[in-house]
Amino acid sequence: MSIKFTGISDEGADKFVDQISLHNQLGWDSMEIRTVEGLNICEMPDNNFNKIFDVLGMENIQVVGFASSIANWARVVKGDFETDKKDLLRASPRMHKMGAPYLRIMSYAQGDSEQVEWASEALKRIKELTKMAEGEGIILIHENCDG
Image (cartoon, rainbow, N blue to C red):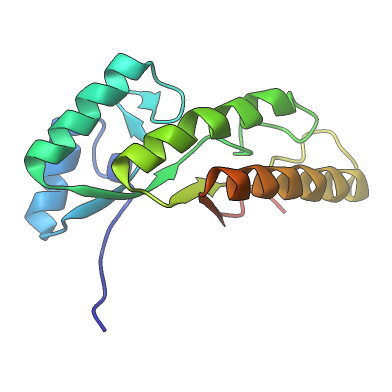
């Protein structure tokens, strides 16, 4: 069994060329991609995405997952759930194109919700997102952001 190392690309650098350079310096041939030049991979326009796809192909770097803004610390549990659903549906064909099976999400910020209300709504939303992801053939991975 071999172990594959990867990292969230923007944690090393903002500029895409620097993200690739850092992964190459580490000897890593894969990355989890989140933001490139300040735009989240799930939210950016198609022409930006296509450029990134082309560069990764030229650099022989595989993308193992997308780190989305879905349910992250900036999206409170009482916020607009449609934004998260749209992000998932926009990410899915991009993930398939890149061969990336994993979509990182978080668990919503509590905001001004009571503890019980927050937990209930967060679980309800994550269950719905999980069903959507399953229907799209992608796997959600969870990073806890609050609570």
